[in-house]
Figure (cartoon, helix red, strand yellow):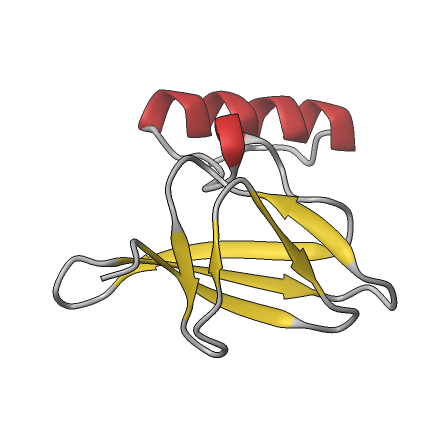
Length: 99
């Protein structure tokens, strides 16, 4: 609970500290934030498989640098490691691993 509405930079610093303390981070390489206009979330399937959702809200294609591992796009069956292009207004649903 914050008893005030801090300036944007202060709020960003508070949230970064809370995330670091609780182990919350970006699923991208080295915990990097996503590019502007890109939304990244991760979920665990009922069997424990990591699924990363990447949504590009931009009107241009963009690259997203992935964390270590090989990913399979569940929508296209393409595999990626290192980075993946995301089409303008595109989406990727990435499963960690290829099996």
